[in-house]
Picture 1: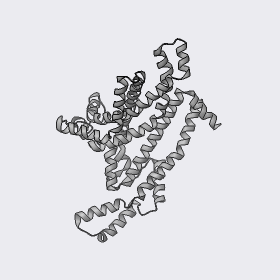
Picture 2: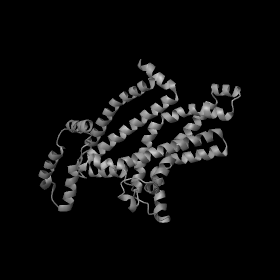
Picture 3: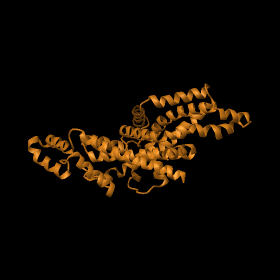
Picture 4: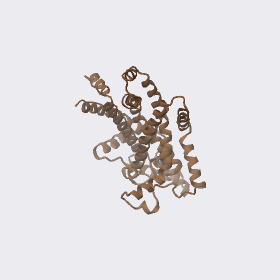
Length: 341
């Protein structure tokens, strides 16, 4: 019962946050000078040689039809009302499709890649952190530290460019700029063959995201475990004659994991941003290239919808991290419940 109350309180606390995020994301996008019609006017002038004055009547009519002539707060109300009551994120001006159709195929790919990278990266980072802590100042600790810092200091787009060079000019790989081979493109159901083919296309994204993501977790887990191993209750466990293996697995690691689990929500944000950056460099059809293209085309509703959905996913990720932390340590939920009472 206490866990359900904890979850309900955390969920209710996210509502005003999401409202604020929707207002800020929509306002910032529309506050940028120019809109889709301005981009259309510029392209039409370049292709036809007409002047801006000649195109002004058409531009005014397009703004009225798209609702771009309304005040920002009216546009926001129409947009958010459609999302809340009918799951309608608006219409893409450039693609001439509902926004849900434009991002519907790309968003699950980005989320899936980021989620796999997060889970594997956290596991690899925590495991290497335990190994480094148990071998403090030895060669294994040094190698792990170097491995971690390389993942932190090397920009992800540089890693992507290096891998892209090897894929294109050294290995002559056919798996560039796509998610599946030709034989699986029209297959609308997943098989083991299609899944394996998918991983052959996206492994550079996963490799870079996991390497960059595990680095911070490795350093955090190493430091936490070293602190815990010097705690009083660990000394007491040693005095009682418990084996080193039992002390580490039962007493030390679960307590050292608290900050790692608490940090998972923010790391998911990092993984999504990393996936976007890498996908743009490698040309993989996920959300990253779509955001870049929509910014260039000034397709505002697509950008606003992506920002809002990603923000909701990150908030959910933080909520899941809070729930896992509460499951791992009952003191967390008890502290939350007592502060609300």
